[in-house]
Image 1 (cartoon, rainbow, N blue to C red):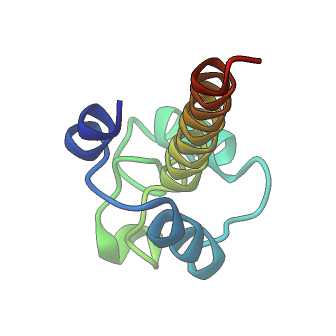
Image 2: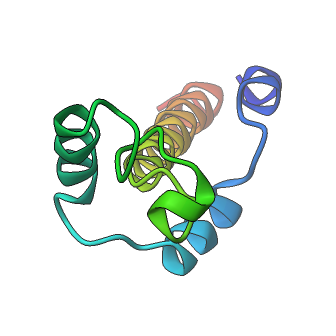
Length: 94
């Protein structure tokens, strides 16, 4: 299970959590960016806008993607801990 996680996750949970702290966007920013992009034909302000057009250059949906990845890693860790606890109980004969 650990080897699969190592190949599946290119960054650590801690790295992703630090990234989220540095790159917070207001709630709904991704929805706003998508509406702005479609209203203007996708040329300015939207998720596909260039660095100069949007200011920061970061797609406002990216924090949501990283948050999903963080939650997935937390669940992965919990599953690993549960399996290790069951294995320990099995080995001890409980």
